[in-house]
Length: 478
Image 1 (tube, one colour):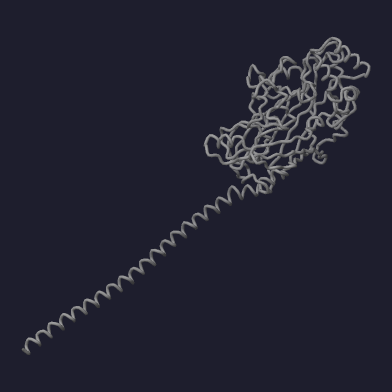
Image 2 (cartoon, rainbow, N blue to C red; image 1 turned 135 degrees about the vertical axis):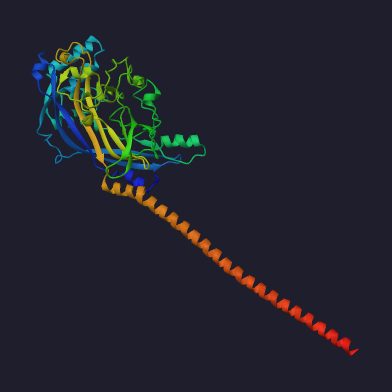
């Protein structure tokens, strides 16, 4: 299937006929007073899931002369209360005050004057380090005096008056994306390079790099990076892909895990995120350019710093329940149980078509509280990484796409093979008929030639016999 305007693949990409669901699990603090008083370490409880559906539509599509396509992706998230096991509007949870703790942590290296000012402001506004909110408020927006004040005084820094964590995470704005398409090249090396880059970013909002990362091209260059909606084809087991979503703030490598056959009978490749994707630079040097020691200490293994994309609030990405992370992350609290079967990411892709068939993308959002200063209200949280919520993006291949893939992978090749066999048989038959016809024609010509030769022979013989008789008669007469 080719990606051209009006093609089947184009229409599938334009408005993907898949239901992308997001299961959200939030972490509720179950011992607030004991922790704040220093008598116990933090204890959290996972609450959920709460279901949401993400809808993607690619708009303002333009095919460019340089074999790229430009478009504006638009994602919308809707609640699916009928699928949820709990009521997000009724469930109340005790959660970290991201605004207060985040601002205090952001100022950890700032002057005494700024830190003392924030502490005084927190006392004046009576900002508490833990909040009692409904799940819906925490995810989609609640009134906070610090946020309201910051949005009034510094609107360029905080352009919102209500703080909702998923609201901020999924507010990607309008982004103009240009991606490369496939094209025939004369040189084999160029063909392979183009295949590697097909459907990858040519530019993102006019830039060929991510401006939030300046430590090296490995972390910033968009070359070979894609949204993960379509993949180059045909795939091999040596392929590694980089995917990017604005909510993640950085690239995520997707590596081959195994090959096999899906329950529907389709040959497929299984990909996942490598175990060391969030390791600290001393364990995974590829992550060195994501560390900014001049701003804040590098985070422990298992955490990815995404602060530049979240208003300089120290937010970190990880696997759910700190799976594969530094053991120290779990030692500071109770209630987390990392489980690879529940918390790993995997993507199943049909290698001949480059279409994802099943996706399970699992990520956790955390608040990395650094060593704050002069603020007694938040001091107990120093050097804690607080789990906020984790998300499970998933979709399975819809029936319409499954039927289409069956036609492309099984029916079309069978029809093509049958057509080739029929054409071959027809060709043999025509050759046979031609040979037979030619043989009959040659036999008829030979018969005619033989008959004519025989006739001439008889005629000449007769003339010769007649000539001899006449000669004898003439001699006798003399």
